[in-house]
Length: 464
Length: 58
Image: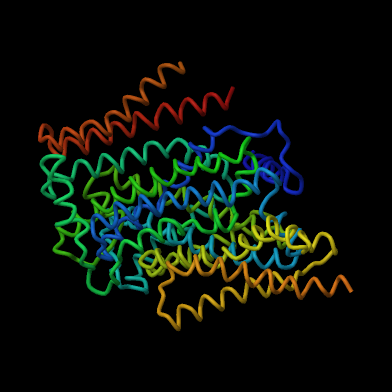
């Protein structure tokens, strides 16, 4: 019965993969608002908020940086991703195939799948920190890269095995459960943060800002952590989902929208998940630090448990699991696009094993901010290629959708652009010392310039 | 049935958020709040999952 359901689901997933979504399937603004709010209140929020505290961001820098960074993210969804999504109404993969060719799209899928594995791995690790509470497993420190012990590896393997098994058989159920859990998670985040405020010294709402500056976002990083400023917060909030908006991955979702304005619905995810949840989890971590004499141990499960009891621990498990599960499934689908003859469950099993192995290393959680930024940066150039190909090429006399037009499996100009822009970003970071969070913006313009130049010379070949 | 589920789950959410405000104003203890949160969680998930299962069975 489960296999039947999985097969049905896979058939649903394949719907409109290579054709525009028909008008009968278009959805209104409200359904996107709920979807974004749910998707962006996840396990990662239990890590990102505390890491801002660990990196010593100031209270006003955080409040204003998140306000503006999230606003820019919403604008990116609305003005960059959404207009092309509703005009073309095809998936990102099909769009890439038309522009870059099948082989380059496969390379993109492979990189995407690997990134999904690492992201899911960090979520399995987050869930494991909560499951490990009754067993008193030693927590990893913020500066740790390697597993803290055999007991940690054992817990991660068990959580990874269960998550992979469920991903193999029951994605539908997890998706439904995620939808149910999303509002509850937001309430738990909020309630836990409000309840611990008196312990931090907030006795009236008027005290909050002063206490926030003195005890929560103090402006002083923990030992071994770099210092974050307003600009770090702004660019992180803007670019942590760069693969989705500027990178165009959400074309696959927004192609179902009635109007391009559905892109503004991403505000639901940004201001609930990436504002309230990050602020709330930061507050919980500040209390944890206060109670544990600034101990560098970092376990989201322990942090939530000490603030909200069993509900907090359940919330971490659910948040980690409901994020890891679909992510493993998506990684499996991305790989299946490369090997269509392979069985989905076998691929999901392989993906789950890689994910579980990655989850054993605490570095994945401790360096989540850098990983998320890297993830966006690596996939962003493909979004820039689509944007330039779609809007600019017809205006400057270059051919759009070259691979489809010339029956190419490999658009060399796109490959040069992708690898060239990443190499340029690497050089930029090396020579100027610019941190990864800031590379997305110059990277986008570099990609655009490279794609125009390389396409100009490459397309000349075909006009001869 | 639908209305009953809506009422119970809404009470669940309220039991998660309101006691925390009570803790803030020092009307409730943190331990009491944690218990209310757990009850709220059960009230939120229980009917949602059970009712969904029944709907699927039909």
